[in-house]
Length: 300
Image (cartoon, rainbow, N blue to C red; front, side):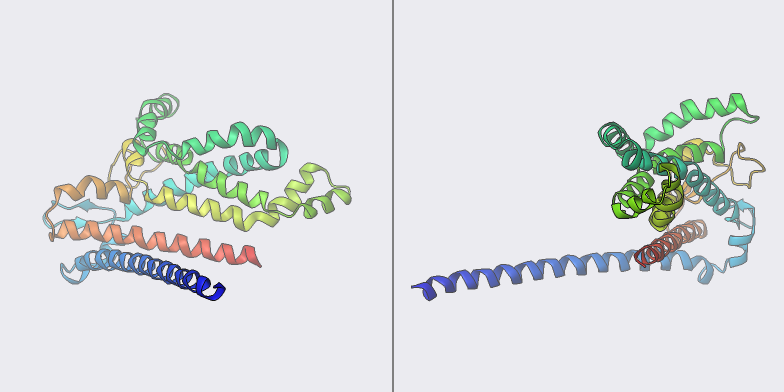
């Protein structure tokens, strides 16, 4: 009776286990195929401008002139590359101190207040659509910069200010998890040696968690680098290298979104836009590799 009653249960357990393995394997295969398909599609489209249309790679990465409708057409993407890096780096420089300080407040200084009020507020920022950030930046930040600084207010400074608010939840969440995972004995040992709370935070907590904190900053930069709509609304979309932070410029994402719908598939301009998309994808891979390197360093 026991054996006969146990066999169906064992058989049902084996069926459920194999069903779970097959379903998980199919999901993994689908994910891998989707990723490789996207990489292959973007790479073939992006490289066709060099191999099919004969555009010089030095012109794309070294020229500052963008005249796709000129005779002959010129496709210098250097202003867009500089614009993307400038806004992303400046946004990270603004958001990183704010996010790390907010994480220290929530974990080390005022944990009850931080967990109850500050953390939900910061996480709420992650759910706001990009168009809302762009509209707020266009209505508030741009007029403010126009009144305080020379120019129209559109430019790298306005774009970086909007992006810094957008990437703040990413940096703060990762910094909070890193600080919360720090062993309590490390801080207690610092206190036992006579260090104050600020000395403990500055000389013990921050250096120990620095790889994880940098991971959050890099992930924030990756999001800022690929953001399109919010930056497009406040940066001015001028295809030249600005001489100051308050002059109009453009980014890779903004020129792609503005021009892709006005080009014919397979044309030279369309292929060059796919080349810009390939640059964005390669930069995303670079950010991922940096994050993986920082994670290995943190585990050591």
